[in-house]
Image (cartoon, rainbow, N blue to C red):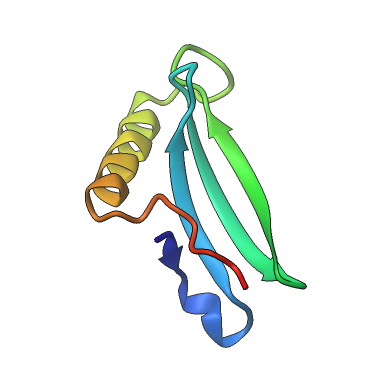
Length: 79
């Protein structure tokens, strides 16, 4: 299940990371609105793009791997 954030006192909000087929990483912050998941996503390109800082790319890759290992990259079923 995606990581339930500490914003849960205000609204149900999840953090999730994913790896695209193109090798780019996606960081998603998603809230539940009227029973639907509403994501806001940013992309960190691994092959150029705006983000030139390799330390940021390594940090995002490490975040993805840590969340994957902990089983935190799948959204829960919303009712």
